[in-house]
Length: 539
Image (cartoon, rainbow, N blue to C red; front, top):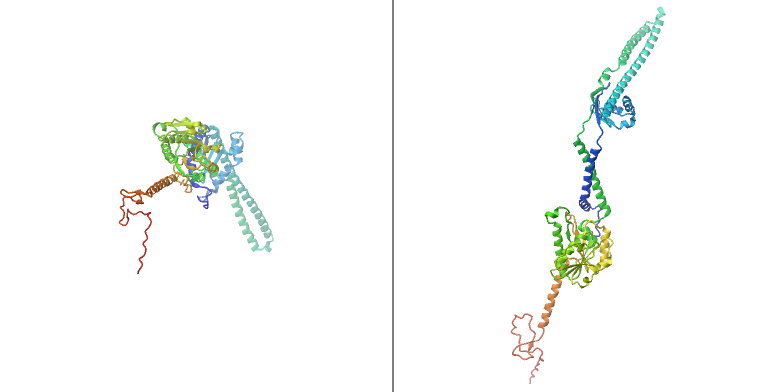
C-alpha cells in the first residue's frame, strides 16, 4: 500500500482471515455452548407447569370488542390482591410478590383465558392453578355483582327523587282543587299531566332497580373453569434441543465476538501483503503446518512436500551465491529446523555442509540428518573451518541481535502468520538492517489457504531471490565480455605468415574465416616509412 493511500479503519479482508484462522477457538466455544445448554436441560430441568383455562363472560361483551375486556382480565389476574387471595385459599405462606413471578395469564380469545402456574412439585402447581382460577372467578362475580348493586342503588335514588316530585305535584293539585270555583282549570290539568308522567317514571325506575338488583346471573353462571388444571407435558427432545440451540447460538456469538475483537486489538498481521510490507522483504514461499493425529499414519502430509520444495528453492539460491545463509524463525522453530535439515541434505550433494543450531530449543539437533551434513552449536570450531554453512537462529522476542550476523551473511526469515505483531516485525527488519544482514525473502508458515494477496515487494531487487537471476545473467554477460576482450587482445598481436619476412606483418582480422580483400596486400609492411615522390619539374 502506497504512502498516499488512505488505510481503512477496519480491514474486512484481514478480519475475515483472522476469524477463519481462529475457527478452532470459536468452534470450541460453540461446542461448549451446546454442551452447557444440554447440561442445563439435564441437571436443571424446568419446574412443573400446570395449565388451566377459564371461560370469562362479560356483561358488556359485544362482537366488536377488540380484546380490551380480556386484556383487562389478564391485568387483574396479575395483581398482588389476586395472588394473595389464591395463596389464602390453599393456606400458603408464600409471598404474593414471589407468587406473581410464577404464573401468567394469556387471552386466547375474547372470552377464554389461559392461566399457567409453575411450582416446585406437580401437586403444588395444580393446587395453585386451581386456587388462582377460583379466586379470579370469585373476584369476577363479585365485581359484576358490585356493579349491578351500584346500578340498582342509583336507580332507587332516581325513583325516590321522582316520588318526591310526585308528592309535590299532588300537594299543588290538592291546593288548586280546594279553591273551588276560583280554581284554574288549565293549571290543574297541567298538574295532572305532570303527575301522570312522574307516576310512570317511578314505576319504570322501580322495575329497573329491581332488575339491576338481580344482577347478571348469566355472567356469574357462565364464568367458570372449562379446562381443569393439569400438568403440561414436556418433551425431553424438544427441551434438550431448545436449550442446546440457545447455548450453541450464544457460544458461537461470543466466540466470534471475542475472536473479532482480539484480531483488531492485537494487530498481528496474517496476510502475505502485510507481512512483506512490515518486514521489507518479499514472501518467496509458504509452508503449511503438519497434521496432528492419525493422518500421519496413512498419508504423506502436504506440509512435508512443501517443506522439501522450499528447501530446494533455497538450495539453488545458496549454490549461486557462496555466501553463508541463515534461517531466522519467528514463531516457527520446528519448521525452520526442518527446512535447515532439508537444505543441508540438498547442499551436501556438492560437498560437506555444517548446520549451526542456535535455536533456544535445539530443534535442529533433535532431527536426523543424512549425507555429509554436520550439526554443531554456535561457537563450535567446526564453524570457522566449514566451507559451506547454514545457520539456524531465532528472531523472536529476546533475541541477541549482535549474534545474528555470525550465523550468516544473508538471512531468510521463517515467519508464522499471526504470531508477531506489527511493532515486532518492524523491530526485526530494523535490527537486521543495522547488523548488515540483508533479508533474501520470507517463508510464510501456516498461511491462510484463501489468502491470495501479493506478498512481493518491487523495491528490493538487489537482495530478493528473484533478483538472483538478473545477477547471474549479469555475471555471465561480464564473463562473456571478458572472453571477447581477451580474444581481441590476442588478435591484436602480430602474426607471422609463412614464407615472408619478419617485418611483413599485419593485424589478423576479427573473423578468421573471412578471406583478405583484393586491395589488402599481405606483403606490405604497414610500419615501413612511406616513400614520397617528388613532383616532376617542367623545363
